[in-house]
Image (tube, rainbow, N blue to C red; front, side):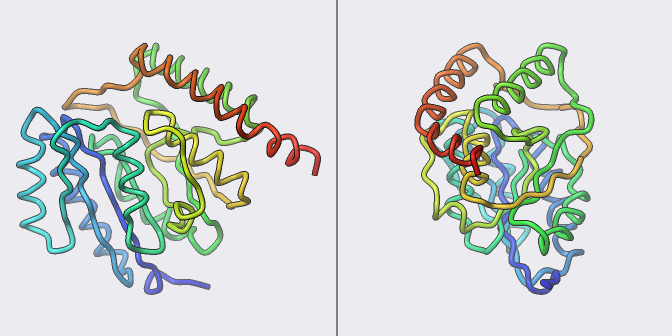
Length: 243
């Protein structure tokens, strides 16, 4: 069985409008990663063309910590493209991500690492979502639609707290670079037979910064992408149901 001293972990944080958040996230991440005593780790801040001072704060963090680096986007590429960049460029055998908005307790990463000997992916779900009633409703409906359309049973497919075997990203190609990307990755992983363990995490309210999720334009694009992916994977889904 693998132990912490066998694990090399790539960690990345998408950061947009997070000048007051990303320093808290990175400081805590480095503290937790050092406590875990892994074989090796890396931390990447993917700064997605923020109009505030996120880029400057990220550069100071990289100067402070040898294992922290920053990738800057001159223009905003969006959440999905940033996520794919983090997953597909990870150097180590496992990759962990959470958002740079400080809405999760990085101490919980320790529990996720402990489960790596037993699953290809350790997938978080928010035990109590700190959202507005509108966001809670859209999140609930989204998860129900995905369960029906793709015959999957993730509790909270979009929870931004996951560890995944990096090899997955060499075995799949995703169609979207938008908000649907997290779900598409999980759907394709399950069809390929990757195993997962779900673990509840505490969700914290967003204190600073700006959230761009759940805008009507994003919702409509996601609906279109769900339909397109369902058409593409229909035969695979039916075959899996009939096994």
